[in-house]
Image 1 (tube, rainbow, N blue to C red):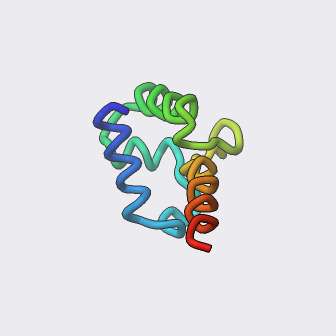
Image 2 (tube, rainbow, N blue to C red; image 1 turned 90 degrees about the vertical axis):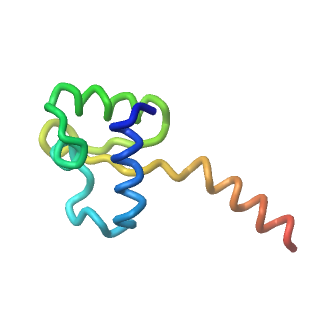
Length: 83
């Protein structure tokens, strides 16, 4: 991840699951990392391609969420080991 992407991901963690009432958008990204729309789009596409974000919607209604799916199997394994 580049420094802009790291900053945005950390901000999402800081805000928590209810932090962005209408979801995390490119506009949110641009505001947090102070970048133009072309850079924001490229960075967000990179985060989706790396599996860090999932994308829903199209055009202006596009929203992004942290992809926590890879962690569910880890959590399940840890819970099973404790039993």
